[in-house]
Image (cartoon, rainbow, N blue to C red; front, side, top):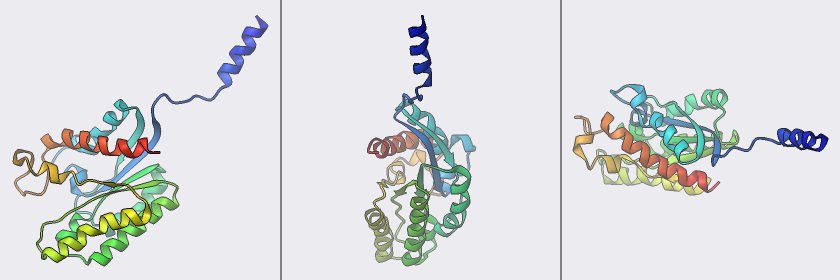
Amino acid sequence: MKRFLSILVFVLALPLVPLSGYCGTLLVLGDSLSAGYNMRAEQSWPILLEPILRQQGHDLDVVNASISGDTTGNGLARLPKLLQQHQPDYVLIELGANDGLRGFPPKTIRQNLATMIEDIQANNAQAMLMQIRVPPNYGKRYSQLFSALYPQLSKEYDSPLLPFFLEEVILKQEWMMNDGLHPKAEAQPWIAEFMAEEIGKVLEDK
């Protein structure tokens, strides 16, 4: 009996090991493409993402800090407080579309994104960068310079580069709003599944 009680006490004293692949917090820092533009917040893909990741065995809390209209400058300004408040383990940066649509200098966009990645890494978190592309409103050269920023930064900072989900969604016009820029609520479940698969690859590499 004494031996049984000793074993029981030893077992109860062992640290609990989560059964899932990973425990932590994922912060999504984006613009209207992630904020749930013209729909209820709970319909947005980042909110739908969390249960899918958990089904995959990744015990992640997903915090959607996206705001419609945000630029990389806006994201950079908001990031320090978000890092302090949520202490995320991962931060997905989905920003730049509004910069590109307004013709902001690529050098400025690059610097904003680079500083965000540096801030995230300084807080012992993993930065993930989403590739963003913009239409050639300001010419082909501008669009190419803009798009090239993302793989360059990904390589420079060893940050995973995730594909731009809008490139897939836009192929189905019934999923797009009349402005031709924003996915409808009907597209959000597919986006969540798509992003869960891509983010899952990053988590499994840890």
